[in-house]
Image (cartoon, rainbow, N blue to C red; front, top):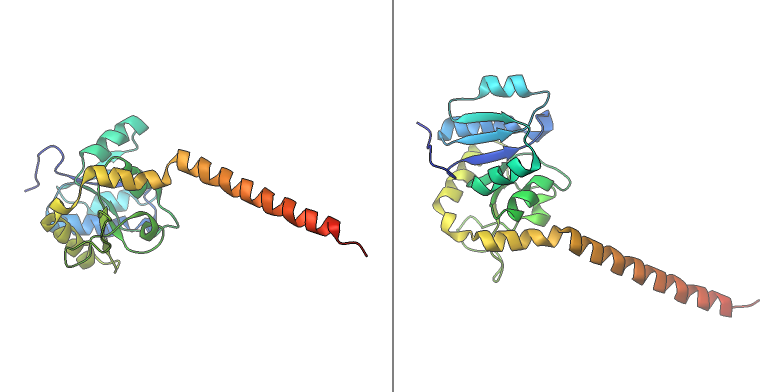
Amino acid sequence: MCAKEKGDYYLIVSSFAPYKRLELAIDAFNRLRLPLKVVGKGQDEKKLKNMAGKCVEFLGWKSDEELKEFYRGCKAIIFPGEEDFGIVPVEAMACGRPVIAYGRGGVIESVIPLNPSGKRINKGESPTGVFFYEQTVDALVDAVGFFEKNQAEFDSREISKNAQRFGRERFKEEIKDFIDRSVGEWKNKMQTYEGIKC
């Protein structure tokens, strides 16, 4: 039987493409019998729906406002694929929710994992998620189980604070600083070249 309490579900937000590896999550949550809500659509929709047990609910695409509510209400986001960056984990963290992700690609830059002993990897950094390192159902099941046992280690305010590293304002400031530095270096080089005469 699946849990029915509000906020007692896991969430996937994704297009349904093969490289997203959503079948791992469907199989894992069928086995775990924990509620999984899936937001998205795509080419593998029929296949994934045919795999899904009673605890997996497909919701289609949602508006940004609706999506924020799903993020805020979930226990954690599930991210089984590998992406260069992966905006979904950052959006979930911005809403204060932890991430359970395959530990390759962009998530290793955005998510601070709780290590397998249940201790923080770096002192002073609050964990924002859990990684699994093999794209298998067993590895994901183990990661969810580890998360379930260590939920008290995750602080939604600290998770949200971590996501701010990827916010628009910081991006604007860092791009402006980069351009200012680059222009300054170019001007210095041009002055040096102007002083060299043959």
